[in-house]
Image (tube, rainbow, N blue to C red; front, side, top):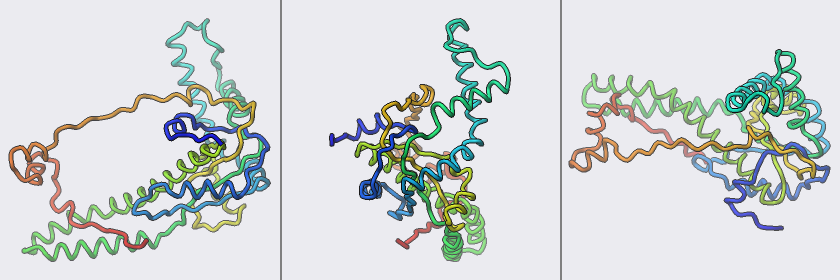
Length: 304
């Protein structure tokens, strides 16, 4: 098999929804999953878990839930098509357009369904893989308790009761932020794993498509597969061999826009360093640190 370099893999990998009937065996899928497990995760928690459906089970789930999951996406797809039609009309004479835009809401609805059937409806026999995490509410209760305990200890260390109260109430507002950030970082790890899974499959000559439509029917899907309520599916991935007659995604879904980058060369800290001042005091004077004791505590999850 031809080796695929990183740059080529990043540029060539694309979403494929039309597959052949060639089967992806368990050994190859396990190899891809193991390779993706090297994706980065916060604190090396590796919180991802995988449900891999066989070919027959995949075909059954796709037939039962694919369209139901897409139905809530159709209004968004219609708006994307409307925006694309308006943009094309603004840069080309109407007579030069490839097709005439629908005139009524019903016509737009039919256009969306036709586009789904032609380009987005899954064909062939791919395998369906779900990336999920186990909902752990106790984890966040423990996190809030430990953060509060650390905050109290830090406040008691202040020389005066007034200073202790100021520190406590200022940092108390950060606990909800800490909980949210902790949840987001766990999600980042699962996103990394999901993308790594698609690159690993591409490196083995397979095609993939990250699906989000199954998340719209997750409750019914969990019930159908006999999964517990603590299973939180965050991504679904089609994995298989691309069909010879697979249609490419429309151009509007394949183009890449330039990345907006803000280059920051100077901060209060760099200015203070040139003057020999303390960085924290310089930042505080510049208004960058307006809340006292904003960094009163840090919580680190040592459970690995």
